[in-house]
Length: 260
Image 1 (tube, helix red, strand yellow):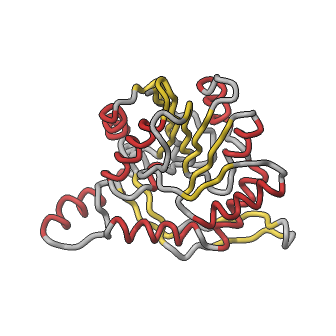
Image 2: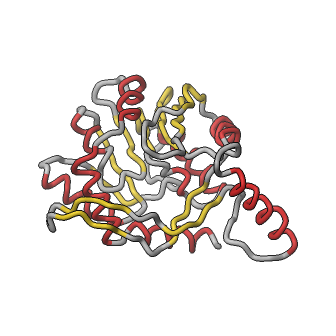
């Protein structure tokens, strides 16, 4: 699938009504994850620092950062996310600068921000290896000297219950693709799947909603070695790389803390 077409699909997917309802609820009720709080407290130490919150969605991470007196700009690729983020900020009487933008083509000058955050596996939802590399370069460009960047990804784990899944993916990508059959994956580790069902409480309707998303979701599942290589080649120094997320998911997120 062409990268531009896939990106449009991703925007359409995250613009859906049920997706928006879920993200609105997250922004209003969830706040920072426990691991995010710990890492932000440890590495975002400058008072009143400037932060670019990439993939900000409707403001789940942006709002707590603003409440901690940081100067934050929230950026998201999906216009509907930004539209609802602004509504939530207005409702909470918060002045937050939200902008529609592409992490691989940031509309900011060099050395603008003290810190950068890309939460909830947002970096790995950028389609195409070159575009993900470009996003890393762009983040580094807009960070000031010694600036800190925190992001997360789901690691590709072979020796788990997903062993045979990755065996099939290897066969599909390296054999079926190479003998001329067309497949969706642009890079090994790409995944396409129906968005999972989700239960959330709709405050307006005062009931729990079982949301089934009909569109396909894209995410890249990289190896830890792959991420380390791309980050260091970009010029970042890795300060921390580890599993800091406590969740019910059997696949744990890996947090990466980088320094310019």
